[in-house]
Amino acid sequence: METIGTREIYSNRWITLREDRVRQADGEETIYAFLEKADFAVVIPWDGERFHLVEQYRYPLRRRCWEFPGGAVPGGEFDPIAVARQELREETGLRAGQLTLLGKVSPAPATSTQYGYVVLATELTEGPHEREPSERDMESAWFTRGELEDMISTGVIIDADTVAAYSFLLLHERRGAGN
Image 1 (cartoon, rainbow, N blue to C red):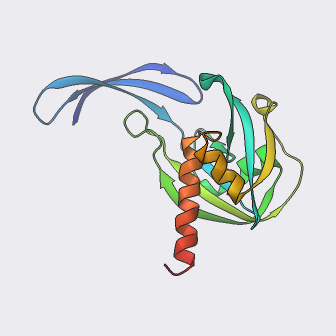
Image 2 (cartoon, rainbow, N blue to C red):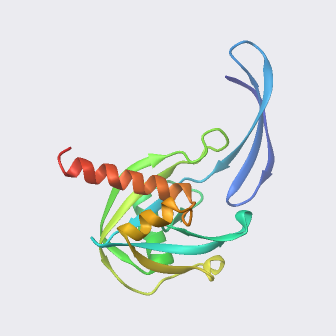
Image 3 (spheres, rainbow, N blue to C red):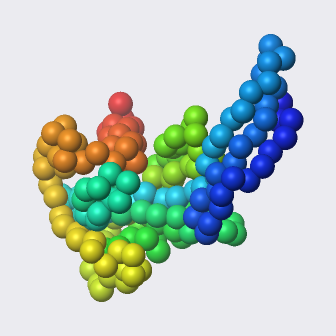
């Protein structure tokens, strides 16, 4: 597709809605709207037996959601390991001795420019969380692998980034086992 024109419909610190006029391969012109969002890191805190998840209210869904910690830092150069370290500390209070980048996802490739980076956090130590004001209602807890998988399969966990991150962990473990 060739971009003929572009305009910003709305913008704030976290998101920009753009509308582009594009020419498709067959020559037809159309409108394409999409979101520009900062890339993010999703962190899998794993102590070898349990996973640490956070639960918070997600306004668009009007419900609380369990998910792996994570977030974005708008502007500047994006370092997924640094963002993972920051989000882990802020949301859970955990500090990781080891952070391993497992993969990259595009949560909504048809509607957003955003990428997510999946980071495994191990060698964990506990400390005080440093949540932002918008995260005041956040809870956190440890779950076994069986509990996590049950939460995914029964729809308790609906966050696609968390499900994708867990898939990356399973692939990472499989490769580590020599398969």
